[in-house]
Length: 113
Length: 116
Image (tube, rainbow over all chains, first blue to last red; front, side):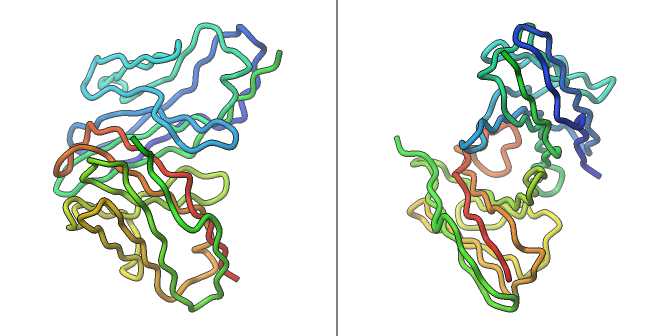
């Protein structure tokens, strides 16, 4: 089956700390992988994506690399800011017979000044 | 370019009733998906419509049904409401064609449904 597992939160970091949020997946076929973010009081929005193995998605200083050998898509940022405080969701989409879009449970990040 | 809009914002129903939630996709987007998000959880994929046909479905019973209209609007209908149906219902549109798995989803703000 298809599934996404991401590290549980909350994650609390000081400003300028390094961030890693782990995400692993299982999928039939060849999934595309996504990170979505939900800032307080706002809707879900795409942060970055990668559509094939070894692709690296990046946006706003965040990066994630599609690792087929480890079935992972870990989110990283070298120096977090208070404004990065949000809930981060890892997701995959796959078309094998029919279309499916699977989200992880989300990881809440809190960055302290 | 307007974003994805949903109505109503909040809704309270009683067990056994039926509900219709509405979504207006971003202009030019042919595909719409619906999700259920319980508190503290990630969105659960209900189904996706492309050009008014269902082309993907998650693990939801048939009492969850949908419609997509040519004017970029869509509906989610839920019959025989149960207490566990209480959740935030999200609509998302995407620009691609049939089952394009690389597409970004553009989400609306959601409808909060409470079933008493």
